[in-house]
Length: 258
Length: 292
Image 1 (tube, each protein chain N blue to C red):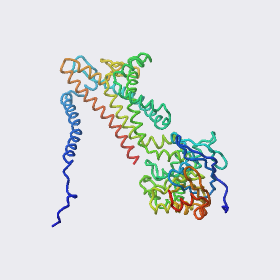
Image 2: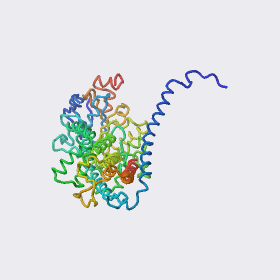
Image 3: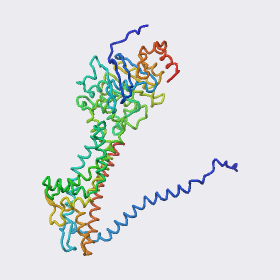
Image 4: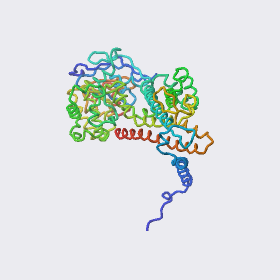
């Protein structure tokens, strides 16, 4: 069976390997991430799925002792080319983290603008418009429009995570990496973020790491199953969950391990 | 009427005596220093407060105890402390930022860390000898305010570096990741996210450093402070004395009246110290509020 209608790859990895010190956590990953789709990465703890997305925006190398090899391309450009500035890469490949991490010293408004202020790219645009657009995209506008001057940390956990998504979107990245964005949230907050992902995929290429298999089926079009640093299977989400091509995938999604 | 309580719910007696004893010991540990400090300051205030008047502040030292003032020493101390803070704070904070935010992966950081911890334990007279050799003689600064301030700056540098590093460590790594993930450079992250959040802790270090520097006498004896001087410093290359030097000089004299002068000078020194610290505490509280 062939996967149908796979759009052009926005990001690709070839032979991507990664280490923490001497411990190898990725053992050669070849993956093409489709543009304007949600791609889910699933797998048991320690399979390397977080490390994988952290290699895509070169956050992995910030950890002392961490290293990687192989190629990662964004629109066919190798992001590990020595001439590439990882800082510029991260403005095009944004990231949302596992635990909501708004800046405690900043208001809701300033949190949304943080990326633009930090990188001094705000002056050309209208701050109020940027704030409203990003908060609307993150489905948070109606809840916070009257208290933009309140600290970002005064919001609930689910709102904080949407604030972090708004903060990431305000920089206008092309790819958004999400590292288990709902793992610290309750089911209602999780549902709101999942709804959000459906609308975001019109404009962004999204890669989401998740422990939650139902979440992968709900939000993603493509799913990759990782196991001990290898990509076992990568297919359309419907197909991977209904007729997995590998025994190990089947064991995992039917709950035999992990 | 209630049923007989089961023994599993009854108040237990074992360990209670030990806990009460510990709590009282802890209370004593809190109040003992306060009592000693109060007794010390109270005694000084009784001895010296009557001696303090405007002339005592503004007059020059004199061989006659009742005419002697502390103007050159007070000005010398203010010069010293301002210069010391101006030199040590930027250098110390920069060193701490480098070690914490840039040099974490380097091997040098570990060596420097041990060196700084050891430097903090070196007796201050050794810094005085260093100041004498390095600044007064080798650098040719002579017995000047700047030589004294540089000596004190080196003395308090370990305090500032260690407390600043501690403050930087309290900023969660997830905020560093958030900033870098948004495409900030390390410098933008440090300047706009990390340092603002660590500022209350950094200011606490500054308070400790200034308190230490303003009370130091031993290094100044070697690094050029003079016991008698008849004018306040008029520049960084001027000769100087400092309040602790003046106090030391007066306490070593046989006449009782000079001891009263010393007590009064100590009260002034304490007030200056409290004023300087209250500025830093005010700043710290302002930033703590801003950091929610």
